[in-house]
Each structure stands twice: as structure tokens, then as C-alpha cells.
Image (tube, rainbow, N blue to C red):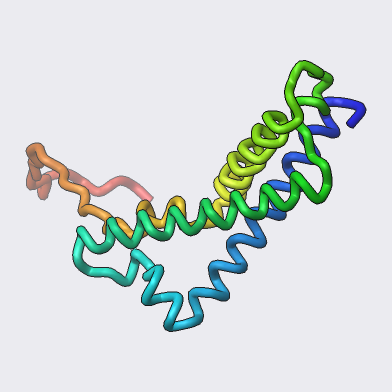
Length: 151
């Protein structure tokens, strides 16, 4: 890579691919009953403790998918973020590990930027909205003696 802009573009594109492929794979898997028994959708679980367990399981599965795809991309396309930034002190293995972590974090940020839900954020969408409670006093005055405004 020749510049920081190319490094940023590489990270954004790879992170986008990771997010889309992971989301698509998890969606397709959710169509199968066997998968739903292993990793149930937290939104379909009524018991709060079981819902939390389902959320944790979905989050773990999400990050395993993301990590696997990040590792594949880093090794397939020889992505080394630290070296691409011009820092030559890094050991190749640590540079690749750092690159995997950057792509994993980037995929999470791409999902947030695009406002797409994923397993890591599913619990937030399953919480029920609480009603708004307003306290205070409201005074109503009878203003029958008031003349209506002119038209």
C-alpha cells in the first residue's frame, strides 16, 4: 500500500465484505430448524435468562464467523495493516493478528454505520420499549368568557 487512504479503503472494503457475508450466512442458517435449536433467535425466547443465554450464544457465533472471514481475507490477500502504514518494526505474525482484529472491529463499525442489526447487537432490538411516564400538574381553566379571535 502506498498511502494511508489506500489502507483505510482496504479496511473499509474488507470489513464491508465480512459484515455482508456473515450477515447473509447467519440469515441462511437461521432458515434451518437444526440451527435454530443450537442458536435460537433471542427475540423468540420468552424467559429472560434463556434470552440472555441465546444472546450470548448468538454473539459468540457472530464473532466466530467474523474472525474466520477476517483470517481468510488476511492470509488470502496478504493484508498487513501495520506494514501498510509504513511501520516496519512489527513481526509478521503480530501484524497479521492485528490486521485480523482491525477487520473484525471494522465489520462491527460498518454494521453500525449502515444501521444493520447483527447478532452482536440483537439484544438491544429485543428489549421491549418502556412507556413514557410524565409527572406533574396540569391546570385547565374555563375561559368561556373569552371572545374568539377575529377571522
